Image (cartoon, rainbow, N blue to C red; front, side, top):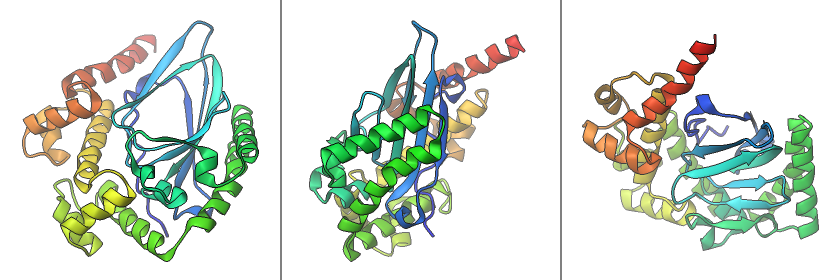
Length: 288
């Protein structure tokens, strides 16, 4: 049984979203490598566009896009933003932390912001990968999400079987255990890196080396990002929530540090973010 290593948080201002998002479980024999699949569909009027911003998780994604591009995207160095126009669909596979390093077996897999062609990651011929990506997008546009996932699953299965080793499996399982405890709240909001190391049964320094080799971000980064994800989610749900109380509830000892972290990650202070999230709700009430 593999526990979730990434929450469903991270979409900035979800109330304003102009797309449909569907999340799907991976095949059971891929659950050690794949966190989940996801499909996004949109249909915007002519001349309109929408830019969605996402606060990334410590996970890489394999993404098949409408223009035929099928690539692996490592953890972005900052926020991820994508502008949508017209009609379309995208099919993605969120790998578990360390999954891209396992599939690629190269140090550059953990470089922040890396984008790699899917054939290099999957170890398959360009034509086969392009055909699978095109089939996945076509199925997604037709509303058949299961078929979209089925189009890419065989390639993932072959790649994972080729690259799995006992050492890689031990490393990714240990990392996954730490991430699952973090996003699942098992350690509480004030968890520290030594707490994560104790959970993993190793030293702080060994845990840091493990994350550097397999994930590309530090355990401290993971803790901070989880707190910001949680804060953004709580603010989106209740924009009127007091910031001092919110800071404490997500694991900060003072509001100043919370504001600094939140502003650095999201690009706007928590108060401004809350006001932005409140606008769609007010508009919906006015139209009701």
